Length: 289
Image (cartoon, rainbow, N blue to C red; front, side, top):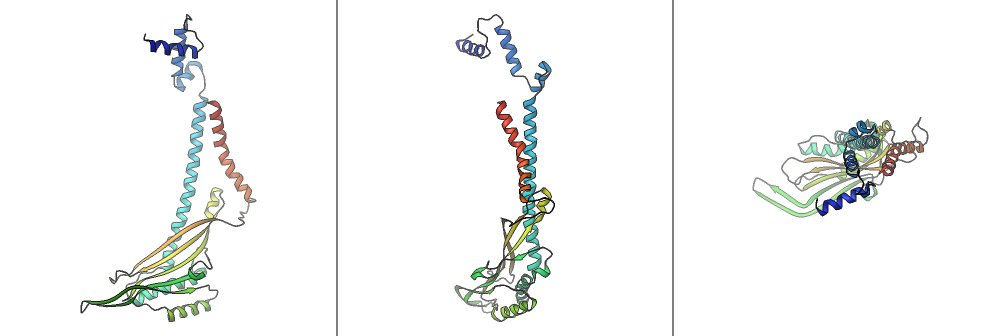
């Protein structure tokens, strides 16, 4: 044996409380080392020792996995709710178009659908007052060149690249009469010159509540959707690209109330009960180390 092997052997003997000069130190050391490197099943067959630590670790893995799955399902509900609302907004506010007349009708259709949203939509939405530009509920804006003349017959054009922004604000509406008046006011002030037109944007916000989280004993979240409808004509190719951008933000609902579940602290207690087993297992593992 080398000096290094002798030193390691002495250290193991001291750790196992066997002096190197003890007659049975070599046999005992081999048994200790053999038992130390046994698997939990071999230890159970050798001494009948039940693998409590292994069972504790497996239980911890199961609970953490279940928590991760529940967390993933909750996030899936959030993303699904946003996507479903985006699809609803596209069906509500957009339409196909190819001519100048149909483009103008599409712009007014989006505004009309917004004004008549409580009567048109199956989903429960609420207007957000003062959310758009100039403290209005909806902002209709067009961007166009200051001067623009295109004449493909003579292969000539005359364009001033300076961009002009013109908008129309809608502060709020209550009745069907006000809807008609607002549309007439927009039609008289908001005209589209397609030779100069770059794009038309409609901006507004809507509120909604995702109540499907009640299934998982979670407090429903309140959403604010910032919607921008873009009619893009910058290419002047004869096809105006239509897109709808929906950015959703989550906020805590005010004074939530779920019938049959008591006050909100009961829901918080459910969350704490879910976290308690994991915390207890961590404490047990820390003590057993």
